[in-house]
Length: 119
Image 1 (tube, rainbow, N blue to C red):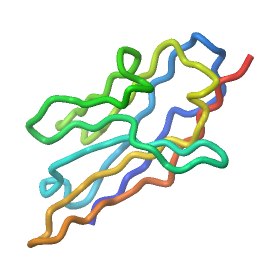
Image 2 (cartoon, rainbow, N blue to C red; image 1 turned 45 degrees about the vertical axis):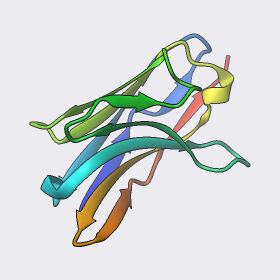
Image 3 (tube, rainbow, N blue to C red; image 1 turned 60 degrees about the vertical axis):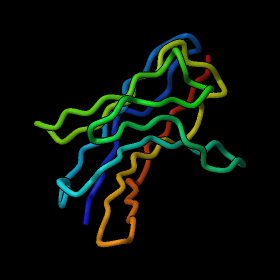
Image 4 (cartoon, rainbow, N blue to C red; image 1 turned 60 degrees about the horizontal axis):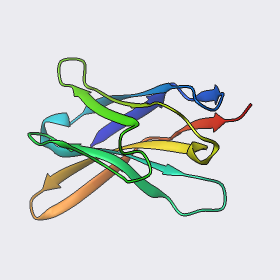
């Protein structure tokens, strides 16, 4: 079991930056992929970025060039920074972790942190 807690959301003006953090605890050693998703009001949840345990980061087109995902193994934290924020970035952002248990993949979710981009 992996427990995830996001923080760092809030109100940001267009053009600003935001740094979201996700604190992970539990059976972290089994996690092979970390990701951020977001869900805007009235829309489906969408993938934003991910970073595998030993891989390169990948980004959705919506944040490519503006987003940076990183993981600190020593502190067990996952971070997402988004620059040049736009109103379309307004959403609840979720941290996720995927663990391979036998032949099954378990995905864990945090409770989410709300980001509002508005002037």
